[in-house]
Length: 452
Image 1 (cartoon, rainbow, N blue to C red):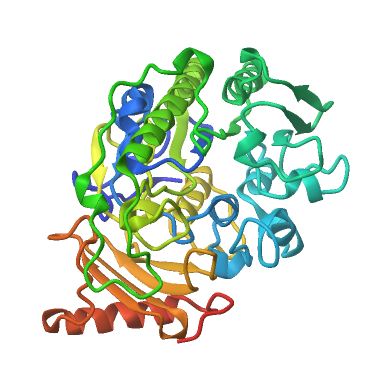
Image 2: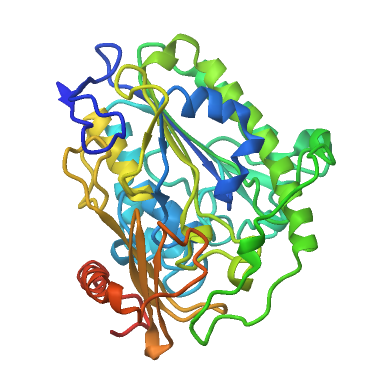
């Protein structure tokens, strides 16, 4: 493939870098955590040492539709919700049924890599609704090994019973897991992933998709980690309600004590994920040097910011996620990038590195010399907010809600906690207009229930 230009992406900007460490395409490993708040990486020393310090930290990793299934659909396909039609976890325009019926499941990065000769494996969480709604024995295309968590009672696998009392379904026999310490799903996923690596032919590139339930609520740590996290702290500013907030936003704050306890458990749940990342990297052995590693969360999570305990909102607590890339010889170690990068961009990056094509990708490879300066934010209405469209750059965020339920504009340079809505400030009139134009151009078609 020659060389990939990274000058547009890095704060440390080499003019070009060699692609790969050998004559074969790179192995690809994606680690996906579940509902991980960006500020919880202090629980993950292995990820910081093995991925971040050996590669690039994407300081503006953004999830445009910040909820599980739309995010994972984008990561698998390289296409945003407006293209896949997956805006929700369940129901109309939601979940595995929408991803499947739209044809997106037939055109994933797994299909592209398998067609190119990769040995492919998925272990852990797939898409909401797969377990209860897919035909018996159904395995999505593109996977040589597919071991997805699902509930044996036919309901979609949700966090409440995906740490324990679940089945692994897909290729091979279904296996039921109970409530013993050895059944803890993160550890099982790690074991299965290591076995996949150990059984992969040395002369065949591999693609591993490692997707844990952790640290999704109810924030369930492995038994060995329960009660081990030290006293927790929260950002007091997060519990200050935004000035000039739209009418749909709550006007009361949440209990800091409650969320301190929950965040401590989230940290503890991430400790086993961190151990899993280390085990996978170690299992790769000499293959590490020619492996493209991707680490991200499917979305963020608000621990009381804006009076909300949620995701699937346009605020930074929901849309910003931990995001890292490592590829020895192709990505300079210990660097940072402030360029906005999305889940779909990561898929395009993998395709670029592996030399495969995706079907009409929305994402732009991180290795591209020309990258978008911002990201469209989009969501249908939910119990917590109206439908919205918006646009996010590294410095600014603009969002507009349906039915004239409000507009918001934040300048992160002097307001990183989104405490002052400046959409009507005269000094930002032109900037608001530019971002609104970007949102109108990019948010097309608009989410159901949204009208400019």
